[in-house]
Length: 183
Image 1 (spheres, rainbow, N blue to C red):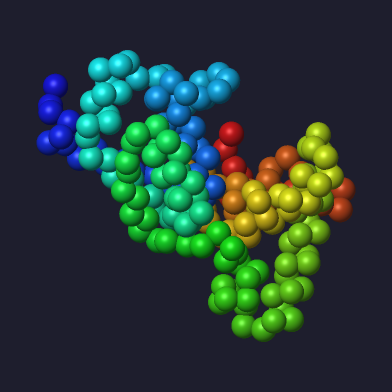
Image 2 (cartoon, rainbow, N blue to C red):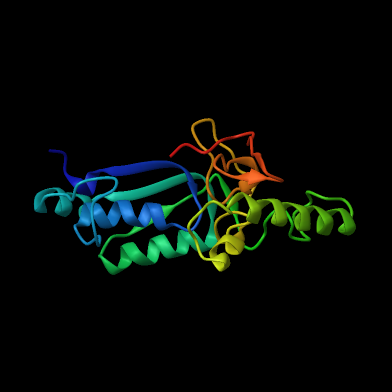
């Protein structure tokens, strides 16, 4: 096996939003994840030692500052250091309805669009067995993050649900999203 100190291990990812999925994968590798394994099996001791000795680089296509910080802090807790270099860095608080987003030319249009999308988004979650507060917190995407991100293989939940939610209805009609999210 190659000497880890002579190795740079590069991870490619489409998106770091909250950082929870990336954290979960590493927690599973480290054997510290709570509950069942969702993504990977934990590493053996020699594999884990090798990982800790290698230079780790993580390159997401889109990376949100808050999720990156949370991911890095979690790895530090487990004696892992990782350099994260998003191709497109973003701030979590700047969704498509934020005044600085440059999606809308006029404030009135931005506010009216947000109101409409929030109403439709919360309605799409009517069938979910969630508390009403959770439906409202996700009406504009996970954490109400208001993102407009779509990849060829899937649509992140931080994207506006009007683009991906396939199980919802609006005005008693089945909703047909442009980019249905894969489970």
